[in-house]
Image 1 (cartoon, rainbow, N blue to C red):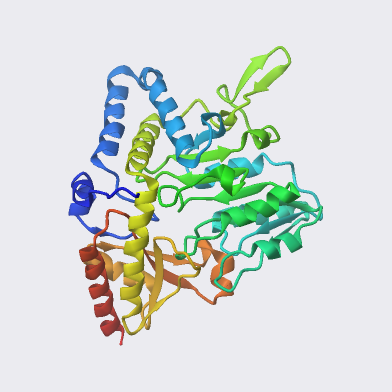
Image 2 (cartoon, rainbow, N blue to C red):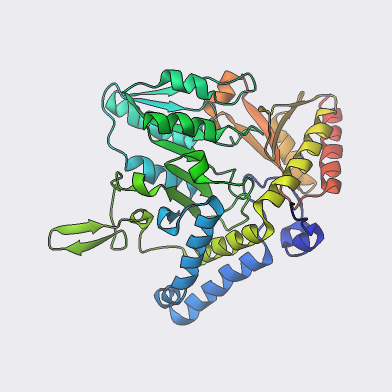
Length: 397
């Protein structure tokens, strides 16, 4: 049985809930008092004792954070590295793959995050390789059967953004994993919007790499992210650069670490990682199943209410949907919607083509407004958002 969340208590422990109506949790969520205290207390220790000394004293807490990150996704601590951002984590793993050569192919989901896509396209262009889009099902999700038909001996990587940034779609990551595992092809997952919103089991998914940000649904601080690398796959990766932490020096030169910390450096934002650790521990204590249950209910309500407003169009794809709700208002640009709602202390996002270029262009969308729901939100806040959107429809008419 899914445990009930004490929303009133959780909101009282989150200062931002008293300041605004926040519907941009997929951009950055609101940290708790506990996360804030952990970060600031470590910075105070740095000022008193020196950053190096404070870091040494916090080593066991960083180990705990690594263990909690592993526990969140059913991995082992040796398979977890920390990074400054999800994009940096993804880029580190991609750069460690064997170099592309002419004729190589990379297969990507139609909703691939724009930063990842740009990195792959640039590498493919240099090598004379190709980046190809996997067809989608009727509901807009990536088609695993179509992927299987595309596989040949020139495919070097399959990349999937699990929950795209431009709407509520949840791709079937496990179905894609079955295809890549059978073919023996590396499988990268961008789970930026999944961590802290959906239960994650990397073994069940079958991915070789998974990355996610701490600042989104996990409610950690900005500047800390998680990189998972499957142990057997890790052995095939050569980091683009090394550090005194990622390798030791022997008689024959550098000896690269055997765990995922080969992708870390000795210089780390310790305060932010401690904050991430506190956020991870909190999410695990609440239970991701309980979080998912509440987000599903609230986002469904928001989708229904927004969709019932004349002049509002919902743009979410998929059968099972996430907490990201994308929409447009007839006659009003999404950036204008965002700005006008901000005047009322209602925070949403506006996403353009660069975020998910293949999908946006395939659907003829230039930009969408995006309201993303957390377990912290309430039905009263949903009503407030929808009332204000309805008022904007009248202004645009």
